[in-house]
Length: 491
Image: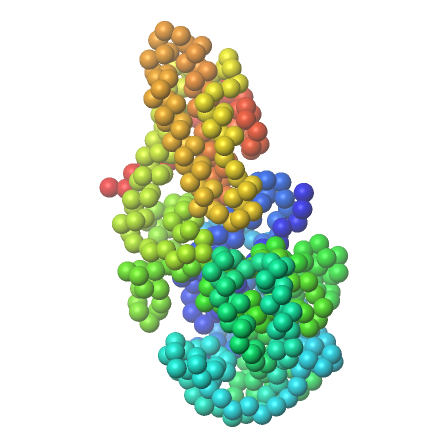
């Protein structure tokens, strides 16, 4: 057994959560639940990034203080995580004192080591990114509202760690996935790495963590936000908890924040002498009509609307199964309904109903005895490579393997025809149905990290509380409960 520490990005509170936030958080929750299923102890962190210019502007727009704005936005995220059945271990806000103290402690350490200096800088500033950008980035036109700024600021000697970072990424000491993102970061690092401006003058931005060595400045929002990954687990406060969790096993992020996590964050850790996270996984975007979902385009899908219409587990299943991790995926109501009806209503839900009805009608709603512990299904079950796919974070492959196993149960039933067999050899029919029911138990357990509520209901109906992944744990003669269809078909 080992501690598995995984994180989502901490989400920016300038607006309400959308399907992108929901996806990353469900993904983290699913991985965390799978780690527990295979015997690890998991520590799953999520939270909110509450400082910076965009938060200050959003607050001013609504005639609120920044803190009131953040306090007002937090329930939108917490309520959504509750709706989505997210079982996180810690939820951190960057306005919490435990975080502020660690940020200021690290700033002091980095400053005392000589890795921070003050300089006057003139360059292009991206309002949306809240950072200075290069001429090349300006020319790309991808950074929205940009303006020329000249001001005195504090800089972190990020360039000092460029070669060391390149080596660690090339050697997979810092594993960046998928491979295309690793190549993207290494390509970025071929150019001379600029030092990072880590302050903003209070004359321009007041809403941030004050620099411990200059009260006229606040900390750049990314230097502040990234530190949540270690402030949450007790860095400089609780050495036992920190040693148990760090380095993180995986930072789950969207591909749009790759540079901050794969360049800024590792160099910050090098400066304070900490090991780097083991892995950074950058997933793709959810698209509609091949366009990224964005508020400005008016194509953002509300996760809560999907839940109201189809139930939380169906939404979780769709989001986890329809995106190959690392690639983009396109959302449409048609694709959702097609996958729901095909996988959940037809393959899984119909199988639950068929097996239950046959046992109810022919074995007085009692799980029948088995005469042999081996069958095609027990062999098929052994072919599911859960641990290997989990290690590579191939959640879509895990789901595909489980669904193929579920389809094999249907094939096994068609081959053995227990509804006919029961009329001539009840013992053999019971053996077939036992294997089907036991396979159903295992399939439900294997899908439980993705659909915790529905699978729990299936296990209750089977009269089985044993969540062991070992074949043969379903007890004969246990009572079967009947229920409404688990996944009613969408017409």
